[in-house]
Amino acid sequence: MKKILWSATAALMLATAPFAVMANDKLAEAEKLMMQAQEMKAEAVALAEKAASMMEAAKAEIEATEAAAAAEQAEPEPETAEAAETDASGEAPDNIAVSYEEDGKYFTEDDIPTYNVGEDGTIDWYTFSGFRRYHSECHVCHGPDGEGSTYAPALKNSALDMDYYDFVDVITNGRKKIGASENSVMPAFGTNNNVMCYLDDIYVYLKARGTDAVGRGRPPKKEKKSDVYRENENACMG
Ligand code: HEC
Image (cartoon, rainbow, N blue to C red; front, top):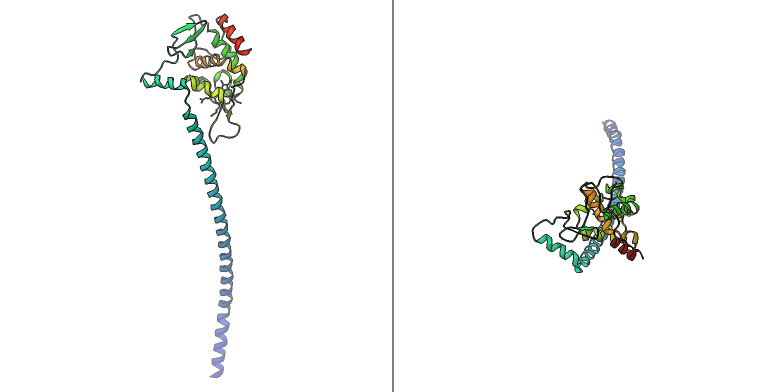
């Protein structure tokens, strides 16, 4: 009887031994998992901290941008105010139709420079000059004939869509799209006489491109350069 009991106990021990080993294995695995979890937690905390600091930086950038925009608004240019008045009258200002001519320069009724194409296709000198100036200073980025490129917008559309004074302002002071990559910048031409002395020329040329009044390539027929144009040009370039 005793012998039987003993052997039963031994059999029981033998039978449970594998479970004890298994329990040890599980414990070790659980410990490993705990350590992994702790590591992941540390990583998550680090990531959260990084995200928070990125948020801070973004906020600071937005604030700086807003401050700059507010500063810009604080000193409105008289011309812009005038243009706003025209808009407030309810009528969309005609940005194209020639109202009068002065020494070979054409204007809309709002005194905005515009192009003129004669019945035989002869274009005014300003528009022709704009063709040349555009293709010496702007086309490398904005594409030939104002058609635009993957890098910079089609100015033949901008000249129609943008207010004249905004157009001039972008060329004079340059512009950088918020959040755009470093190299997507419209440079400021304010100190470049080859551009500043020919702003209206470039503007009317691009407007003529926008309406297709002037086709692609070199315009074939042009009016003569007027004496007044020559005088102004010399004074400006001087
Ligand atoms: C170095 C390349 C480069 C040159 C050269 C350049 N531009 Fe630009 N221009 C740009 C880029 C890029 C933009 C878009 C910037 C932005 O999105 O704020 C731009 C934007 C403009 C805009 C605003 C267009 C719109 O629809 O908002 C005008 C107007 C403009 N350029 C005129 C000119 C004129 C005129 C010339 C030549 C005298 C010129 N640019 C030369 C790169 C250039």
